[in-house]
Image 1: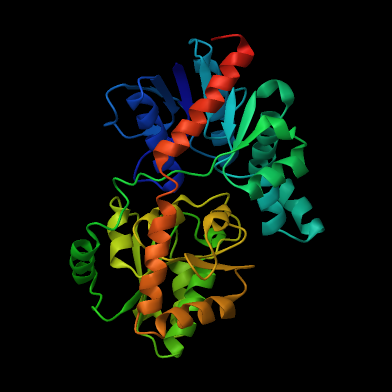
Image 2: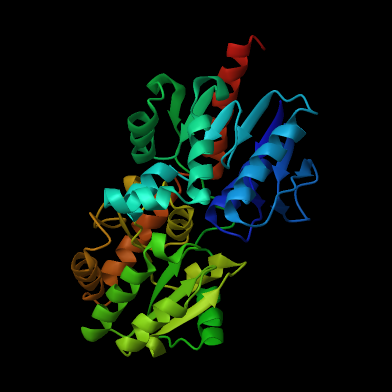
Length: 384
């Protein structure tokens, strides 16, 4: 098959969603498909069988960035003939759209629950453009099939946009188990901890995300502070792009600033997983956090909320801890405390279960299911 994949940022080190896009492209190319990627930003070094097309777009303001990327992708695609066009970013029309970024309409309702305040937010050009593109994506003539990466996202799609259920496939994310595993954990753990000034006896809680507020860093800090007050030797490492200033203020106010490290964006994020004891991801909204699956594959228990699609694969109190809301800091603290009380044995048992769970969600299985969707679409087009 000749396949077009569309992702605004096609950069392995950028974040979990971007790493998935790169893994998907490489996996499809490895199966012998002709893969073309349309991206605004991308790594120069990719799989030799992947053709990358640069999509120009206006960098700012944000409304024009989203609008220009959508329009320029559409224009470039007209010059090619593909068997399958799949969007991994908000674009239309396409054969397949993967809901990796969730629904912006739903996020706005979470972000601004008071209706009259939401009206003012909807006047913003940025939100108006994103919502307009989102609405067009789910118009019947603009897609053939939708891939939802969680039951949560599937249900939201049915509720907000009335997409026929038979047009939706549930395919959980996949992780590159060759890269993300716990085989080199002991070696990486010692080296990275020494480099970051973290003591052997410290309990390291890890937060990874590029949208600090949406992914719940403020609640992660509160959880870490509460654990420290209970007497645990806690270090919190926050990785990703974002402004640490407002979160440092929270830490400084509670005299916790000496226990938090902002590492910035780390290319070898797997080494951070190895150096840590637990991933804390109290998301306000996350369709399916790739970093949770990556961390689990590296043997890290994950603490998250039901508003993260990744919670659907976690068995509560066995392969991780799942709470109803990011506001339930007390439940996160008590769950983590329970694991740490038994001289780490509880933590180690959950680590094994977490790694075992992740092995069921390899990127190869994800690609296999995705290709089946492609094949069904081709049959619908009358192509054998």
